[in-house]
Length: 418
Image 1 (cartoon, helix red, strand yellow):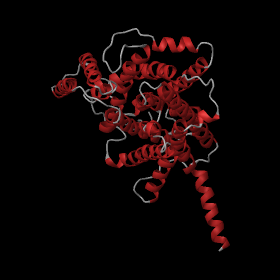
Image 2: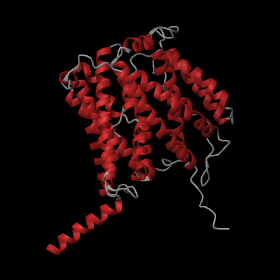
Image 3: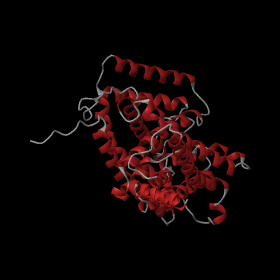
Image 4: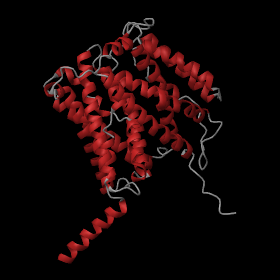
């Protein structure tokens, strides 16, 4: 018998499943968004709009009004997506690629710069329109499913280190987006319901510390937490992230993810539903915008232009610039097996802000259909442009070895000339 295989990291199988499902889910998301745009610009638009906004449920809060399919998707289904986000964040910080400060350096720097620069570009372009200031966070987010889907189309031309970098940056980016949603887009708070949310969360924490490992119990409490958070005035999807942080996790260093770990079990169970159903449904329900009557003047208005420029220019400048500075100053190591051109390409792919950007756009301009539609145009323009240019750049980029040979050759030529 040959030598046994080296031990795998505790998150190897989770990561493999994650990348596989996110890639396929990203392709489905692209198709769902394209279908939504086709329907919204066809005779079916009225039926599409009527279905999404038809009252079919009770009035849970005065803030939301009567429930509609659109609200059930954005405030209900997306809470499950955010539960998955929370599970991924906890796993990565406790037992994954973000478990040490050394591993966190580059993703944190890149994600922070990748959120700050797009917001600044947006605010600069919309500086003469005070009513648009609330949309500053729209271009700050990265859509991990869409971006991984594009990388999957590149096959072996995208080194594994690029995929890992994109995943870790997007996870840290998600943390920032969650904080923004909870803080920047919460106008009024119902103190009693906020207090009730804290009690439910506290009970879940005590369950964790007491050794309770029953997933159904945590899910029932998560639903109660969702309702309390919804009533409190904070966006209900935040309940998903908070609930995830209380789910027990078994550390698995040097081995595949533990079969009996509640967090691993729940993450594996939710991931296919999120990738193949929830995110595509969200994309179809939120990407459809009619272009009827829209000309260059409307498309290049401050709001869509600010969002598109923030996503396309801001992300690449912020992420690539911060990575280059961190590596050149010795603060962090360069990704192994990836050339600078490939790193620049994945920085462009981080400008695909689709899901989170659409989500934040709806929160930024509640009740203003015109501005929400303009925001959608900006998100679509910036995301599609980032996807195309990033794809082409990585597709035709030299690998790390060829890039090093080219740089060495130039250096030798320069030295010979001297």
